[in-house]
Image 1: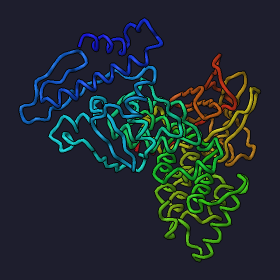
Image 2: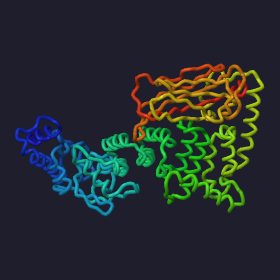
Image 3: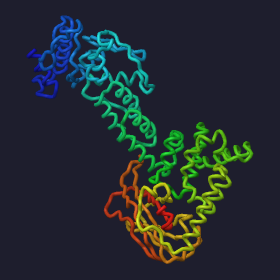
Image 4: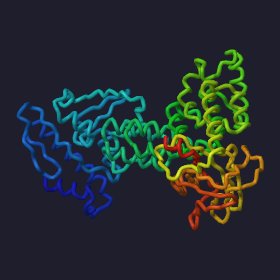
Length: 499
């Protein structure tokens, strides 16, 4: 075993042989020697040599000894892979699955936790020469199984993004940790509009929580900043519910735009074969829901059998920030998707809140308890297209606060205007107001991956008339335009806030 051991040493990354041209043949001879020694040990019922020359005693329970489940040197030139895996030379076990046959070697298969358990335990398959694998996972196909089994004979495996889910499923079944890790790295680097949903689902199924979280953040950043019908078709009800409930969803521009996005998404879920230009999607959706309204004699769509499945998603709309803007309230009333029983208490609540804000001297919260406000904030956002000064307002802002947002010299400022310029409700005449806010600046690359993210966290904004406050400064940070300015606001009188 001295010569064999020395071969295995350089196969495992030690000193290369003096004749590089003979490298492939040396690997092949070494590998065949290992396989031959294992077979000889099994035939004689004696001890089986391990790669380091150590021996273990034969199992006293029967004539069939189990091979040591250790990791053997893999291929560095391709000759081992061709000789042992593709041609099956020296095979001692046959694997059958999905209509294919592989003539393989237990000593290599034992690198898989799945086969190590099968061959080392009291399983029936431990003494069988032919093993029929049952494949319960529909994500696993013949090509993925071939590549996963072949990885046991290779130093590296080339994984295409289009195949990574199938290979991840196979690696998870076979308990190939290195291959699972490689799949995770491929997924991490190739999240985009075409792959994000499949990666999210498969990462959840196969335990890659960091990939799942990355995909969810990608969806929060890109759902409303990109206009992709294919993406909306792939987003399931449970994922959309999680997205809509989140206060970190980047909203362009205000809450009615979340409603409009959901209307288009619901239409594509019900009519997945629809194809057409993006600008025509909303009008087609409106016509389809109007026809449904006539067919159901004016019954709100979410109360019909077809619409009931979407109720959990629409329940998370922040209706309080829709009904306080007249054009938005008219859209909700005309569409008749949402039941009146949802809207009536919201109208009452907002009217009482407005009266309390205008007819009391309460300035608002003095501190911020984030868990208490996350689901109640007004979500709004804006897209800064290029590096030039700009300013904007958000329609329907809370209780007459005419807040002007400005971007100039890579800085974002809030300014409270005392002028009544007919932006939603009239400008409040109270000389001071306090509001809880959070501002997030996000820059994305062409694939939707984050280039820059700046988050102010929740703070209390205290502004008098015509007062200005700097809330973000990009400084020397590298950014890609457009930049998305995402904000969360909340005004509550002190009594309601404490409740």
